[in-house]
Length: 328
Image (cartoon, rainbow, N blue to C red):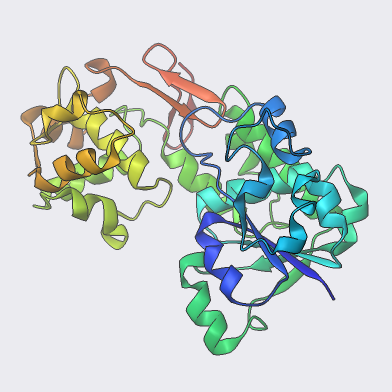
């Protein structure tokens, strides 16, 4: 039986597991910046073209392509999938992976011939841990479910809600039956928590930064990597850095001590930016203490311009979420 594994970048080690003939990764970042357009996704999943930039075609992210696969890499993604008897989906419970899963299932729902081949692995832990667990126990301990119409419909509904120009549909969605995709509801709740708070104008991760600084954590390494202390799981290191810069380098900073030179270092110069992060010693400003105490609204004194799914958040279009969604 020929098996194909589809997974996120976190599952790259699955290529070493010998569980499938080939492992294809999906490396989108749906939690930061504008979402890719339908036209872009169509080209991404379509046939290879010389007009596409490196990284803009699904085959650019296959792991360990054997020479025999040279021509197969030019195929549209659905045609490539058809040559397999079984297609396993390995995505962990985190928000980024769950977004990639629903995007992929939304795409695959247009190809009914593939439906009988799709299997979803229900992972209760991060994919970074999968290599050791699979090597010790095999994959049989990871429960597998057949992907049927119910799973596809749930994924399609959730992806369309996340891509909408306001977060209203996602808020409505968490009150719907999402049991077809067991990890989806917690991921959506984590994502909604990153919308600006009604009282502070900051999302969950930004508020946790302030809380950690108030407790004496002064290094960016702690803010970025102590996930058990931060207890938010939506953003990667690059996005965490951007959030911290927003808190520290605006007109009225909530955080002091982050190097001002970050304003002039190119965002693609990751090494130079990383060096600034490492030598920074952070603390709360008086304004930051007031924001942490819910006595000040950060967004009333600093520019806001970022994306949440298909929603662009700006100062004059600031959707807020607490116990309920607040319109701008």
